[in-house]
Image (tube, rainbow, N blue to C red; front, side):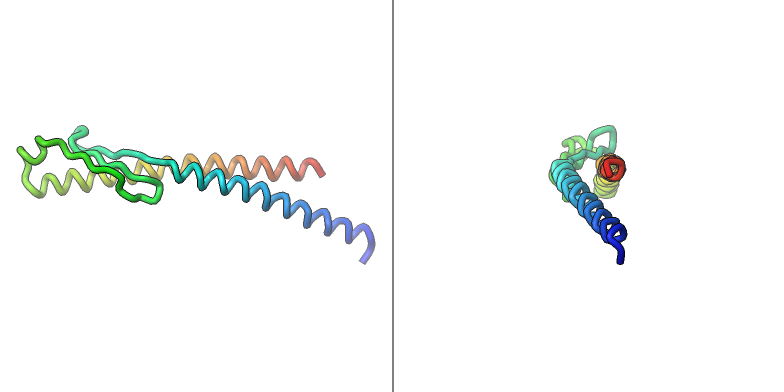
Length: 117
């Protein structure tokens, strides 16, 4: 194996390590951003609200008193299900924004690193 070939392989390995470092830092920031995400879904014009985090764990449920006073069990169940569906949809959109932004940053960082060699 010639010297040029070995140098090329070494530079390729260094570039690969750089990509891992950039990706690792970015993964940490994404994890942190996702850890702080919360969103609230609503149903019945805000009569039922459910807040969740990025792990889709329910953080809070608010049901207006009027829902219990004027609704039967099936209506309450439907409002809760609709609010959870809305919260899940909103969270999926938020997660998509965070991860899309991170992917753009990762690609840009890798491309920048490749341009430096």
